[in-house]
Length: 323
Image (cartoon, rainbow, N blue to C red; front, side):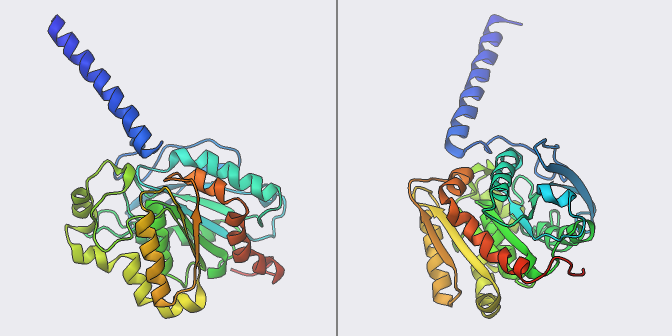
């Protein structure tokens, strides 16, 4: 190899390393691609009380993976049934967040700050957007709301009513929680929308860690159709189901005051106010677009939302309820 070529390759290697570091600083730990865009089976993550599974999805036409946290008592009391939290990760893939979030949940349950529950880490792909893609190639919405929910209820001791299911998600996952929670209030009784995006009427900026432009996302997910983007948006779904959401659903919006999506989240909060949909609006001071930072800063306010969702079921005798 020539000296010039060696120098050139070294230069580009260093340049790539700098780009990676800058991307991490700008977009957080999920900036690096963890999985290809359509990898339905992610790598396995090892963490205490977290197991790795897959299920046969009719919508995907293949097996789809997920991780599952189970509390310590799950293996002790074989009769008790548990509520389920479906965690929807942000863009770029959610594998790095599994360990710290499972630890946060486990600590809270062990300390008695929240009733025990199962936590499903959903495989939302790197940029799945938790919507059925317009070209049909990635039907994330159907995979989750039909195939995954049925699989979880059939294979674990869950509370199989809407009151026993809570959707929570950050960034792209917050968008997904709003979408699925507002479209399917008969499935999910509580909806937590954290640092969510995109919540605006038009997609002018792609999710932070996606590595994509807004035009890329519009083309791949929404078929370059702005009307379709609006039709499947949380705003439109909230409008369509406002009456049921007012009566049935427990909703919160959480955003850090240093998050660059703050204004879009505030506008969405005001939009829900205009529709008369009750919800908690929580602004966390001094926090940017960082899932663990915002959950830790919430402290008891985070678990209070979960307690409000789950405590009535335990006091109401759902322990031995039938499927």
